[in-house]
Length: 139
Image (cartoon, rainbow, N blue to C red; front, top):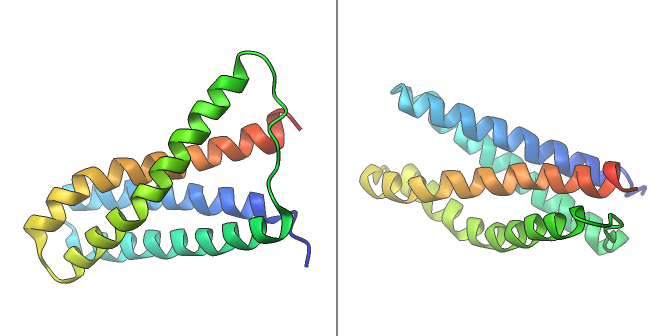
């Protein structure tokens, strides 16, 4: 199998996740909870696909070193480090948020979703930024 296409697939899945999260937020703010639920479950599914693809890629291709120099290097690593830390944090947060919503524990769902959404959005958007910096700006 050719694993070279997977970073682009991963970035696309991250971008789709960010768009779905934003749509889900807008929907719930407008009281459209049924479609919000469907959109958020789809965002979760897309994120699971991302994780599978990401693990397959890195298990087979290893890591790609960042070759940028100068001021962009610390910027890249600051984004990367916060992305990695928050990517680890978002997994349990997203699961708890999802299960509370599915169990209709909306008071508790709302409380944790206020933290989950911005972190999940940050991880999704910075995933795309990291991809662009790593594979398109300094390759």
